[in-house]
Image 1: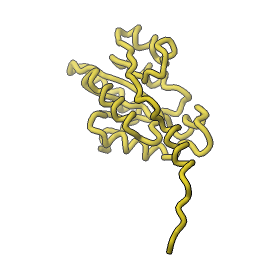
Image 2: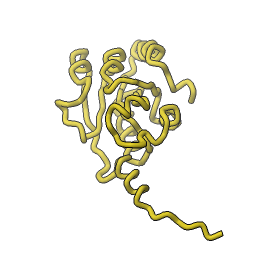
Image 3: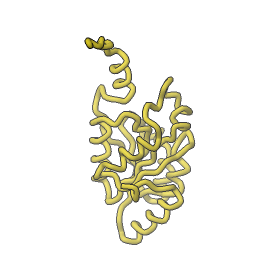
Image 4: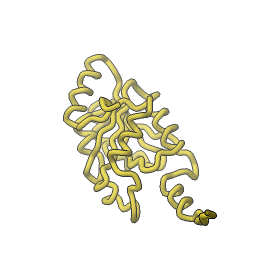
Length: 165
């Protein structure tokens, strides 16, 4: 699993090797704070679009920049990366510190850029970069009513159970 988590510089070299082998590289990104079935279905569908799936994870600093809310992320970046790396559909995980993944996309130039259907095609960050280098951009349907934000709200609304001992 440790081999799956890569610094961007090292990952770039690995991507070049995969391309020389004729493999199609798929890229997606996100916070992946509380991994849920919506995430796993999304990542499995993304993997079906190519041979190698790379997931770029927002660093803790990057999540704060996105304004996800107080106390977010719940899980620190190294935990989120390790959980993603444990999934068989994920080949590589890398971290980015910027507000968006454009620098990572520009460096890796994936063959396929994937986002959830909550993103409009025109607003997908990195779309122009991928298309100008001959790649494709696609969206995958989201599991309705399921997100980390919804899960956090649900947890926060649970009644506290009194200790009976």
